[in-house]
Image: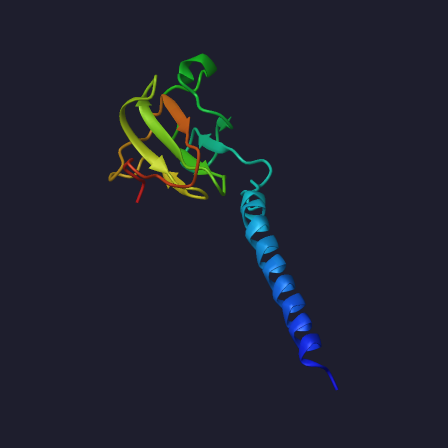
Length: 141
């Protein structure tokens, strides 16, 4: 038979253990959130294709490009594929991230020559965003 003092002591130990466990979870939650970083597939990139069917020259961007003339790919893209899981990109029809632009979401492929976009053979710069959101930018559908 357990005495009243033993039951209180046991309850106190259980209570302290529960608080310690809760504290551990509270402390580990931010660490777990920090570990929940999106891992991009290899090779993650923004692919710009010269032709609508994916043939011809291909430009692979892994960072923002301020002027495609430097790479000989200015106004050549007909199709674009954002092969990132965690990054959206903004495509501009002028260099220096100027003029008309659209945001492409992660894992999205766009035929730039579709009439609703009229963006084929017009890409002159692209900007890599810090996350998945296209917030504040017009999007491709």
